[in-house]
Structures are given as C-alpha cells and as structure tokens.
Length: 281
Picture 1 (cartoon, rainbow, N blue to C red):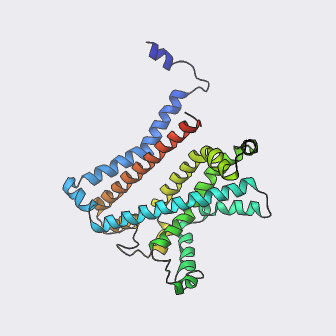
Picture 2 (cartoon, rainbow, N blue to C red):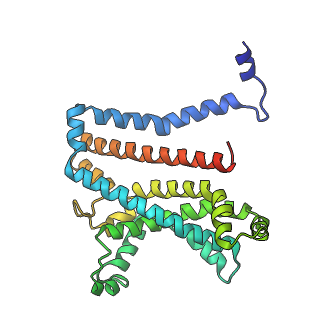
Picture 3 (cartoon, helix red, strand yellow):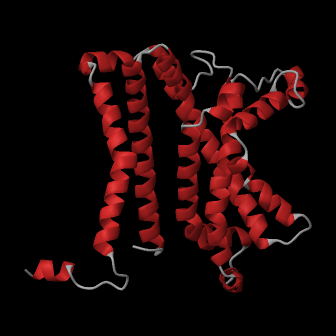
C-alpha cells in the first residue's frame, strides 16, 4: 500500500504516467521491435546455420576492418576533438566563428558527397595522395582511407560534446590550481581532465557508434576489397542484393551485439568516472 501511495504522489512536473507510457511505446516501435525482429530472422537459420555465417572468414575480416578502424578513428577524434573544443572555448581569434561552423559541416554534408570528396583528395592521383605516393604510402582503398573517412564524420560528436562542459568550467578553478603551486601539466591532468572525462567518454562513444555503422562516406574511399578494405555494412548490402536476407540478418545481429557490448562497457566506465569525481550519481 505504501509503495502504491509513493508512486501516486504528485510530481513537480505532472503527466508522468502519460509521458512514460508514450516513451515506452515509442521506444518499442522505433527500436525494440525492429531489433527483436532482426534477431528472430537471424536465429531462423538455426544455431548451426547462424554460426556458419558468423564464422565465415570474409565476415570476420569485415568485422575486424569495421571495428578496428572505428576504434582508431574515435581515439584520434578524442585527442584532436578535445584540442579543437579547447581552442574554440578558451581563445578568441579572427575567423573563430567560421571554424566553429565548419565543425558541423559533416552533419550537413551528404555522406556520399563526403566520400567522393575524400576519395578525390586521397586517391593516388589526388591532391594529397600523389604527394605521399612516392613515399610508398597509399591512403585510398586501404584501411587508412577508411579511418580518415571515419575521423571526418565523427569529429563533430566529440567537439560538440566536450565544448559545453568546457564553457561551464570556470577559469577560477585553473587559477586556484596555479595559486596552489600546480604547473600547467598538473592542472590539466588533475583538475581539468577529471571533470571532462565523462564528456570525453560520451564523445568517444558517439564517434565510435557513428563510425562503425557508417556507409556512404566510407564505401568510395574503401575500395571494398574483400579481406582488405571491405566494411561490414557493405557486406550486409551485398548479402541483401544476393537475396540472402537471413545471412544479412546474421551479420547485422553480430554487429549489433558487438556494438551494444562495447557501448555498454563505455557507459559503465562513464558512470564510474562520474561517481569517482563527483559529477552526478
């Protein structure tokens, strides 16, 4: 009885029951039901058929290419995205607003256009590709080209996640740290980074999730060579074009499971970081 009374107590913002019900229905229709349907279609092959597709050498190679390049791209974006956010927040310089607007360009640019532009630049006869070709470096049609495309589309997620936190961080904290005798490295590592850690992890997770599922901006520069530069989303499309819907569902289910597991671990680390440094419960 007491539990029922507590549940029916008035909230500061009314309408909890209606909004909660709408959230559950919307979440189920948009996310939960399609995911369940995908898993059911994949398991329709039976466990032997499922593992036959999952352990196929070409599938494993594409998964390795997609996830390794996505992790590398997200890691690079964390470093340079944090630096860009720091510069945009802490410094005032001519053209700052233009640079700030260019950060959002990958959001507005169609992914196919981005892929064509990157390929034109990094191809062996492109502006940058022809400069590094004499050094024996090939960018386009290799995992390196895939990584560059993923960096391009993932950078805004890191910058826009960290930038508001930096804007809320007072200069007085840095000044107090310097007053207490800390040098710049100690101020950054012991004062600023702990507060930015949850935002950095969030930016990393968003950039990784966007990169691992990216298709349009990657297929042009990837070259789509099996066992070399073939990404998993492309392999799923190939299976669909072959009318192998069950095989495509299996590959998509594996990709979903790996992505969810990695994002779940990142969220656990983020929650630990918030508790460790006192930023939320």
